[in-house]
Image (cartoon, rainbow, N blue to C red):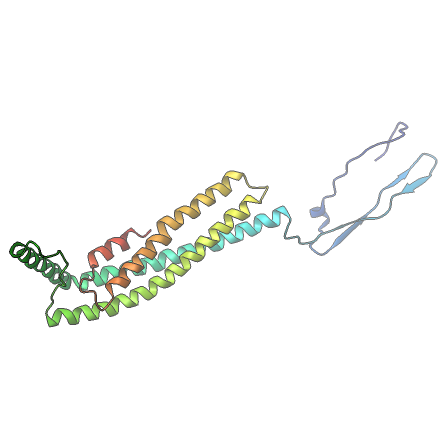
Length: 238
């Protein structure tokens, strides 16, 4: 920069285009400032160094990490949806295959209720208690086979629950990290917090409830597998 008029002091802002200079991570740029007067006298500053370093705490790097985590979360979520769809299909298949057994169980429940009501009419003082339903030998064999198939579905659901819990923790971490990023508005972190709560209520908890119901239905002492309710809860898991 050249001055046509004499100046006792001057402040100048100079922009160094590091991209134009082709400076890469790990490289350094050395610069100094030299001033000369009309008499040919000169003065030079000390050398300054700009070093391109990869800093995980830099705002752009933190934003990139947030993006990477969000992409990983999305990939796992897609996987969870696909795996839960397999559980839903398995439940539908079991419910359809054992529909005749479900009808027999319902008939047995009606008969047990009729007998209990008749006994109550004979002896009003008799305490109310649920009588176990009675099934024929063939139905009992079908029930045993059903328990085995439900056990297999439960194993798959256990894996899905584990993955859903991991996702719940990850979206919570995303919300906490977003709250520390100055490049993101505060509303973004709040939306992630709301998403984490919704994920718990609409995915994790319903899957845990479905798993518990299937586990009850697969118990040896359980004569009513409750397949219609199992299928209903499976259809509600989003």
